[in-house]
Image (cartoon, rainbow, N blue to C red; front, side, top):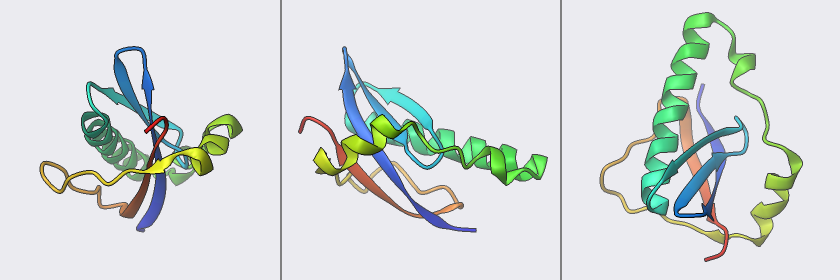
Length: 100
């Protein structure tokens, strides 16, 4: 199984938050790239757990509507190619940065 997901990045106090809208998973980092990488790690762990448990339904829990509404107003974010890889479950990510 491989799919494309939407990642929304936004500042929150002194951190950046990365939010996977299809899975309602969240991670943070000091920079948008750090938050992005941390979220990819969280997706990988959660997908491995779902596979081990044989329950893919627990992975697919959409984020609340208010986060989906932010997506059209955000600007595309292209993370640099260094230091990250997509989890096996993902074929791609569409990233957007709020407040850029």
